[in-house]
Length: 154
Image 1 (cartoon, rainbow, N blue to C red):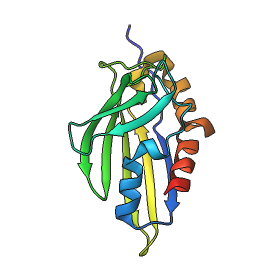
Image 2 (image 1 turned 90 degrees about the horizontal axis):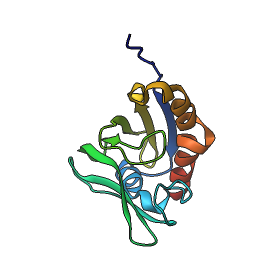
Image 3 (image 1 turned 90 degrees about the vertical axis):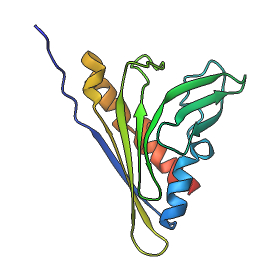
């Protein structure tokens, strides 16, 4: 018997005081705003890099120079949308066989305001840990806090 655990997608949004192009580029520059304690590296986090193209790497660099993959850039459509493949397991380690999606959409709301909508989906890939991971991603320590840090940096 194969039991599938369904987990609702985590959806978060924030409106930033920035033109759409700047909102997009600021989100892509994750190293400028990502919470440094959110790391899978053995040493403290130095930077987060998202290669700006479909097929690009998404990874962090530790203070010791170690690079840890987080996933890939699946789609790159500046300044309106990016689709990232999140491949970090419930044990907070890179897993090349795990694929969840983080879609980020940018919508202009006037000359200097942009609505940023983030959806982390396909969480059923976590199996029995799907519900716990959805709760983690949806918490203040998850995407809510990360988007708040992004908005402040933006």
